[in-house]
Image (tube, rainbow, N blue to C red; front, side):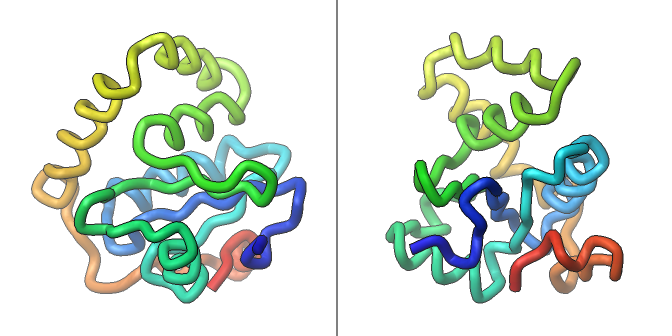
Length: 139
């Protein structure tokens, strides 16, 4: 099942009401010169389908998800680093953090995720993409 994601694209699933997550999506859009990433909120129909397909409980995994039709799903620090390494220099230098054991990377990731609403705030509803960016977002 590819959830409407073309084979050569990657889908970033994010918390649509989180200010930090929305800022991160804007950061990726600005640096994704090849337009290899598509986006969808976890709260969207596509997001819910993927969560159901992979049996992901958002109460336990409060995370960015990276979905690729060929490789499936990545989450937490692995997803964030895979996105970063796809964005070109100098952001791709973050690949060095793959040498840090996953349990340590995810501990840091979980600490930030747990506090993101307190530190960065929360929106009332998911962000609505501009008409220029509409084709990069799945419902």
